Image 1: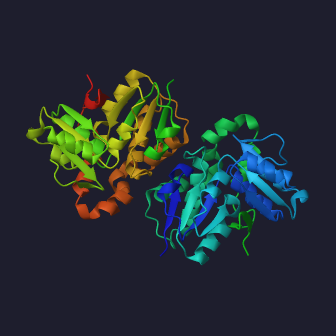
Image 2: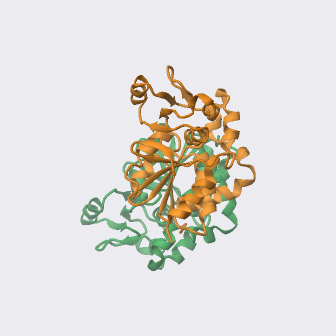
Image 3: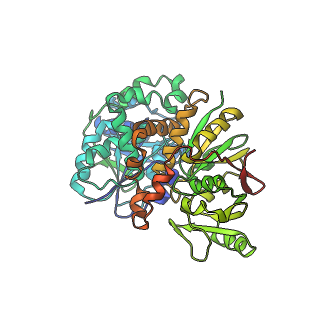
Length: 235
Length: 235
């Protein structure tokens, strides 16, 4: 039986051996939710980069570009980090360069893994089915907030652990905690996430519509997978 | 109103500003439980050191010395890391040099704080009363396991947060999670801790008696506090 582990923040990822494993990168508010949404609306590729500068270079080469820092769009870029911005016909078939405070950094830190896929509540059952079929060890990698633990990514880790618990060994403390947290709050995820630091930090940024959307299960069946420096749809 | 935050592991402590704050170091299994027990039985001082080598040097200078790595006593030292070893008349009035895999490392990483105190279930109400009186910002610092999150230290953080929640601002995600985890499991802490990695890791070391003891509330009223490179009783 393969194992499922949870990494609670990018500051902890060096404690994990990623080799031969599938990493599920999660940044619910809002990087991976945006990515899943974008692929659900027909985007071709996403190039995740760690720095605003690299993202700028790709924009200058003609790509659409999205840069977020501290929860807001960086000036001069084409797209922000609301999933609603990725529902437009204009992005269909395009390649987008993306950098975010937490989510893209987590992807960049996962390169030693056998595979990197992108998870969100918006595609959780697609992630679940994929992992079940692959039958490999899994690490759910919570992007967190500036290196630290956050509630919303851990909640997703718990929801995914809940789906996979009969097919995977769940013996790691972080996974046990995440599962318990999800089970205690599954009847009202929005209420729970509204207690989080993320919401109080960004309350002035009018993101409540985004947050409610990001907590929907299975709006899309897209599964972004990292291949040759970019995210594409698994097929 | 002062704030209470939780740091889930030594790998995350650099994300916290310790200046002007009280750090409560916790390593339930078993460093801080042993320390509280030792002071409860009349020990004079504990010198926490980061390395086995430093501990050896202090032993050679004539101190009693306890060194633990990976859950077991390091050969050649006087004391192991079972709280029952610290209940002897022989340690009364003595100074002990201690190094452990996680707990003493956490103390060494907290030196920028205004005060460092040692917490365990065994003295939780003494810790609570002290913090209430000081009225300063608090960071509960979970020693974890080799840099990563663990259930038992976070459970203590949740129990302490539960006691302090009306007198402190609790807005940080790690503290909210710890409080929820404690509330979900408070009716049977032992059952919950028995699901942990620590127990499966050390199952062969016959530590079940230690674990049950370390989950007792308020067996002692001792409050170890760090002053001039060593832990003494607060007075």
